[in-house]
Amino acid sequence: LLTAGAKKGYQAANKTSKECSVLVIGDTVLDVRAARKAGFKVLAVATGPSDVSELSASGADYVLPDLSSTRDLENILMSFESNPSPTPNRE
Image 1: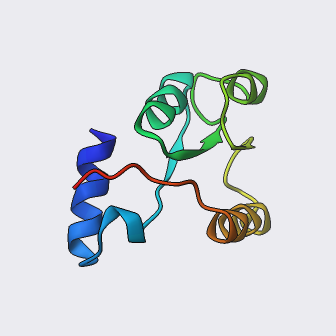
Image 2: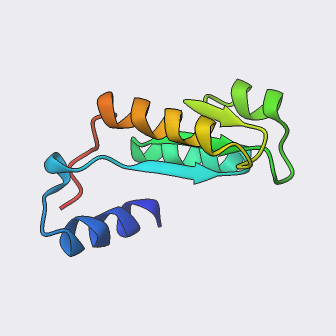
């Protein structure tokens, strides 16, 4: 599902997967695993059933307790933008 969504995004932007990067935002360990399997970086937010420590241990690139701090979110997005993960070619 994540790769299908990414493909639609590439097409909507009229770009190839090599020209784009994907950051998945999720709130469960399963979200982190799915994003990792697809080759994407992950921002995990502990607003669901998983807490910060579980999300960190699951391999998320970034973890926040919630999205209340726009500064923290902005810092993560800026960090991602300057160092995006290589996205697999899903065309």
